[in-house]
Amino acid sequence: MLFSTDALVLRCLDTGDYDRILTLLTPEKGRISVIAKGVRSPRSKFAPASQPYTYGNYEIYRKGDTNWLRSGSVTEFFSDIRADIEKLALSAYICDVAAEVTGEQVPAVDILRMTLNTLYAIAKEIRPAADIKAVYEFRTVGYAGYMPDVSRCAFCHDPGTGAVYLDVMNGRLICPGCLNRRPAEQIRDEASDPVYERSVLMPLSSPALAAVRYALAALPERMFSFRITDPGAGREFHKAAETYLLNHLERGFDSLDFYKSVAK
Ligand SMILES: [Zn+2]
Image (cartoon, rainbow, N blue to C red):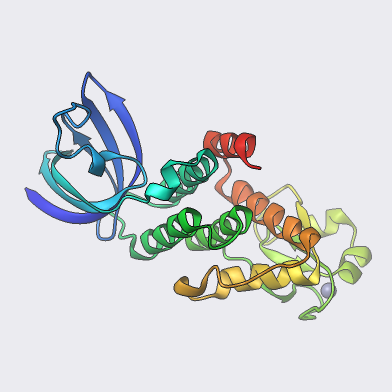
């Protein structure tokens, strides 16, 4: 069966002398693996379309359970990403997260669009890299089914204008008053899901909470249209996003470690 699809190359694995296995994120079929024969040969016409973080149109031949690349053309190469190690490293992490939260044959229209918006933001530096990363982390983990309720304190229901804590494992807010009234064990025991035995509380000042709310609620085309002016609040926002994602996906990422080693 031959089919054609738009797709983002999330990652590549070189194999043989000239071949490559591409992990593609497609709108209709979700994440798929495609064997690209000969694309590392100097004579291949499809080499640019077989690079990581390329968005293009791909003609794929499916035989049995295996997908073979027939042809590929580039729609967006994100060339600004490729000249900068920090941008490249962050893009690799973003694409690893996208691969983690998507499935084979599960349509991925929204996450594909969000990932493309994010790569564009990284390429064009429309926000500081740490802000872009945090917005993507909160939104993808929400997409993966762990959307936190950041509307109010889970105990006293105060919508909160001051500092609060993000109760990471339960995906909810706790205000300082309620935290002081309840020992940590009690907060843990009240967990809606008994699987969660850890208690991870991330402090969020008022501007950091505003950023979390914005990141989760903004329309996709507006997801980076915000500013945090206070550096301390920015750090809280960044730390909360990464902690939230790593705890809910229950894994680390080598690409994240590498990004941290090269990030300014
Ligand atoms: Zn409270």
